[in-house]
Length: 291
Ligand code: MN
Image (cartoon, rainbow, N blue to C red):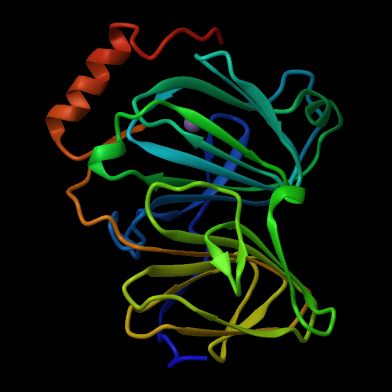
């Protein structure tokens, strides 16, 4: 391993809030500790920590809303989410799967608990990331990448100590299926107790990890479930030792060094572009989708 990166902070989950009536999320960033550029190209991370939803005939979720200027990446750990958009796309994000949606020039969509899951109720745990796009790609056409768990790159940790699922980027030569607009690495590290391994990311890449389950020593500091570890950009190496069976979501990416203008579900470079986005929604340019 190269020299160790130092840890800037190990952040406890902020108090949760509801997104619609279906997602109880801890907004790790942007926020006070991690500002809107600190984890760029990752702009936002909402973490629905493990929660039990009671059975419901009416699926819980978020009704029709627009997005423009970025990508939403939804990673399901427990439970299932159904989505529909104004281009007629629809699908289900099942346990272990990822939906990588490029909103780019804009669409309307809705995100709900999948019907059967909703009827039965049960354990729900999910992450949604907003991945920013550089100015030159903000107005490209929307697209989807459905990345099932079986499609992910799989690096087997020596000694049968677990698997690194590579969603985007690459680990030890194992590549992830997601196509991205800027360089980044996104992995699920599913580790058995006692697993030890190293990661190296360029020191200018913003890097953090979320402990989804279990606990680990991260560069010798203990991180518990539901905590986010933010690394300084002072070196490259990260050493992980699972102190329990653990699942970690690891993020590292080259920052997008451009101005950020955000209003609700729009993520652009300037205020004028935000106003344009609102005008375009009102003019029906994002298409039509029924609630
Ligand atoms: Mn959305």
